[in-house]
Image (cartoon, helix red, strand yellow):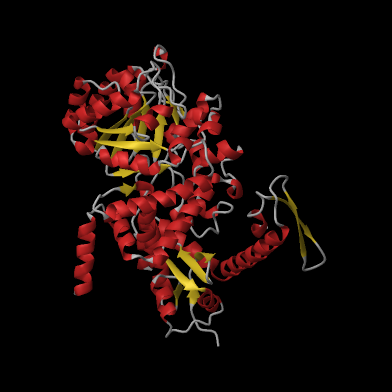
Length: 491
Length: 85
């Protein structure tokens, strides 16, 4: 006799040892045996079975209360997608394309120092700030990029001051970030950065030899030495937490990540984003010299994750941010928009980039593509187009429509759909089609392999390892997590 | 067709209707990829089974998924109207 229950929508994947991973629409997951999975499908699960209650509790099945179960899943889904509610909050401004560095992997294919025509002027900057304040988002983060943005310092100051002026009336949560190699930092700049609570994002690939290997100054001096002394000066001015660093992983430091992490710790950073090399700009041209396979990257990712867990267990708090993001999505019901990994894609609707000449692009990668002559992702121009024309135009609508993971070939039935995202610009770069081709996509392969590993760790459920991950998710010290757990278990 | 999609990176695939109730799927390994035909066949059979499960679930419970999305993204006003009815 068939047992009366409805099966709620879910995706699944076969795991070794006759086990199945199931994930429902709102991202709740469970592991079941193949037998239980088959019983579920055949309506042979009985209500006195613990798997039955697990599946019911996590909304994989509903018996007497289908309407309530549907509403619960819908509410969870709505919460998870709430990053869509506020529209674009990240506004990147390229104040200059000039750079005093000429890095082998530069995504932006920077211009030489004397080419001042690639600096943003005040007319473009002023209009850009006004457009940013047209965004409905209650949070506006203005991120200065380059080139090396400090080469056009006067415009940065003007933008910050004008932004603060406009915000007297707009009353948004206004934040500023400067992405800089730090080598041109002056005392005047540090004072301004401190006064306006600007945060700094810099680049660090490892100790001096690694850092200077691909991050070369145009004038031939060691960029690392200046970076190091200016980082200390900056921190004396704005505090230890005022600067974070981005790591670019190339063939040169991939097998030396432990050394890289040790250097991050030595310099007082409390986390790292293990970012694989993206196929844009100079990096695309230099793939032979810099690149590696997805398998090599994920292999090292697993090694370094193990090392980071050990570090944390030894009392050195240090997080890996990509893992943290994925665990937030897997283990919590909260919304985690992340421009590079969300559905629909964050291109234009979460983040947008204004080039020095006033052209607007949905992502930095789209801007880089334009540098190579392909301007198909240009949304418009700050001096020629209105906010509505830029953000509600045909291009943005197409990007949103074609980047919903729920309906993309290969993604629609993927078990990791609830945790993953879409990058239509990268799809285009790789396949000349914004929908892309999942079976040959390195982006898909990398995320699948990483999520496979994270779910394996969840399944193993080592209490020490999970405590470390919870300390990353909640940004609380490991001792607090353990103390809370101990108290819960005792009571 | 969905089951075949997964293999389009390693193989050229042709799908043809055969006699009633049958579909023929032809695989040709892409040059230099050294496809193991036996393994490919096993993986394809498993994938067909999994896609069939998804298809069956979609047929039986697909409307539930649609109503969850509808409910999740409906304007608050419409939801209040629903509750009032």
